[in-house]
Length: 212
Image (cartoon, rainbow, N blue to C red; front, top):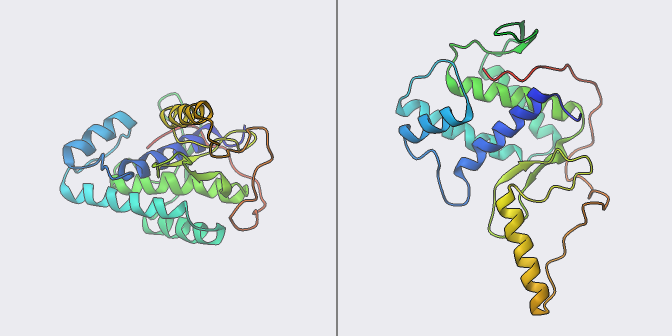
């Protein structure tokens, strides 16, 4: 397993939030839309349910999107600032049948702080393990969504099954038409050199999959 389940889940949650504002469409268009999305994604804890909360989540979305373009030092600096700004204080807790795990914000903390800290704590693991190159952007035509490539050989190219199918159909039609399809790396090919900083060493502490 590359990352503990809670880390993988938090990375997915961060990418999902970023992708609510991609490709010219805003999933979080208003307070009602945010309420629906929060329910679908399983976030719990205190809510204000007002325009300020919506604006804060949108601002966090933009901040997280920038992380996909930063090098290792840049991501580390942003993560540290996110943890400081939310006054994150990791604590071992056990509740609801779960064994001891880490929480870094209380349930009563603002929604945006809980979201930011969950993403930041997951990115701590990514940076410490030198795996920042797994933060990728979908390679499908006309898609700018982000993704986290957790495949063993770093072979994931697309953000979703929809984009995968669309590009496979395009490649098939191109072959049928006798025109060369856009070259795509083989899933078995060695991964390209990471456009990030040098890997950081160090281990990690496992945490369970608890979303605050």
